[in-house]
Amino acid sequence: MEYLVWLEETAFSTWMRESGPAFFSNLIFHSVAMGFVVGVHVATNLRLLGVAPRIPLSLMRRFFPVVWVNLFVVSLSGVLLLVAYPAKALTNPVFYLKLGAVLAALCITRSLIHGVMRDPAHDAGCAPTKARALAALSLVLWIGAITSGRFLAYTHQMMMASHQN
Image 1 (cartoon, rainbow, N blue to C red):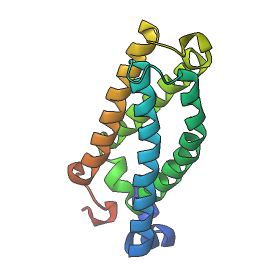
Image 2 (image 1 turned 180 degrees about the horizontal axis):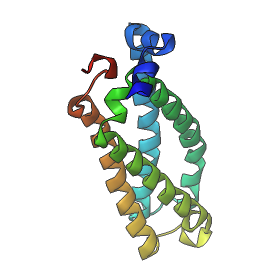
Image 3 (image 1 turned 30 degrees about the horizontal axis):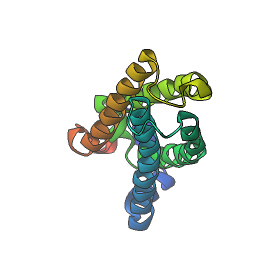
Image 4 (image 1 turned 120 degrees about the vertical axis):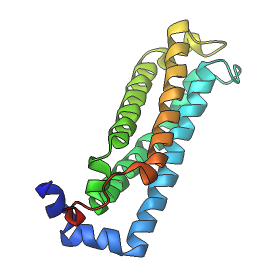
């Protein structure tokens, strides 16, 4: 708990929390970048599940540079949001659920990119059963990540560690 108090009392944390433009612009960057990351994943997973079968699966890989850039923005803005209210997130199990869902979904994506999406034999029609199962699981994980991220605003038990007895 002492570490959380120290962190939230740093000048940077105070500035992130109390500066409207800093906090809200960071929140906007986080939201928009997450939209790009999740959007490409949803489109790719739906393609793997058989939606729009005439679009070659290998072409979906062209969108992943957008994902990696926005994943950097999401990570950086997420850390800045965490610094603004460290106790709010780090004492909330929902925060760890969100991180776990994101990491699991990214691992699935890595597996799909290095496997089925590199093989031009899968460009037409449905992907193999294992790839479809992973795509469906990835969709569930992204839904879970978004939902848990949204719930973070309502499920915290502690806003500021320094305000506890």
